[in-house]
Length: 452
Image (cartoon, rainbow, N blue to C red; front, side, top):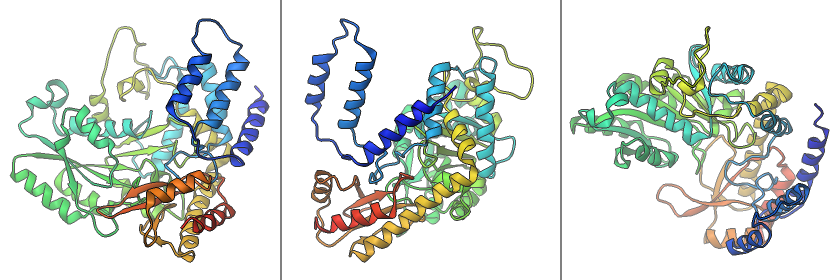
């Protein structure tokens, strides 16, 4: 099958986005009125016309996250191969719940995940699954950790436990864990917020103190979450120390590396993730730094028996178990029906090769260094420390919200406001596009200087 037309459309759209506005100016009512006036679904419309209209809406009424001057959250520009992969998946619509239904798709995913499992230093017997995103992967980690720590949890729930389980993380960890505590029945008060040092890394001493105090108070600590690349500031927690502590205390050690985990393939960056190989589980999102379309999370677990127990299921209407060393994803993951998520990463890896991906990731890390130095030369103060391409900055007297409003109005770039620890709001800029150049960065910093 030829995909020249997709290649051509993607190249044209890329050029249009790069030369156009980044931030839309539209109200909810404008969009609602527009849709109501054109789409009451009472009669069929020409498909080509509808497609063209939807594209116009997306080009006009959306923050263009694939723009080279989008320095925002982890919404990357996407590789051509991964775009084509999404088209193939939509056409064939494979169902990956059971291996027997989609042998090729399941094995393509397994092959891809085995490659990354090895990069993380996990044993060959570890289990891994693609997920809808980091939230699902983190949820999987909590469920498997609970199942392993408390044998009665799966059959009888939290009521059967003699003590209330507790999870430990910092205030910089992703907020999904609060939702997960709610969803699993642990309750949001099961989350313990561990102190951080001046670089916002988890303080192992405070962690040890809180675990000791909780045990004395009758609680049941069971899980520590270290982050490899926090959302706000790109902080990497002290993973080796946390791993040693968790082993000594028989606690499940989960590393949320949803964004920063891709650095594991980089010779320049992988040393900053030392200790991740000792984790019990890892979250990593391909739709972040591996630059594939959303949604493509991944969950890695070194305890396959615990995952199988946590998600075990058996019904008469699903295909029988296949002989041989395979597993049905619906029996080892949160999801049941599931699309072929992994093809976009497989195809991009096959097309670029590992060296191509390394170059892409290290180039973005270099762009982060370029941004830091350019900001410092222009008189801005950088307030975070990370090897990842995420820069938080401010200057004397800056009113962050007002500054960002002007930044958007003049279509200079898209950045966001963030509060680090107890400090005042600062500006957060993250290099998320492999299309960002040094010229983009220098122009943005120069234009920002004219706003202050």
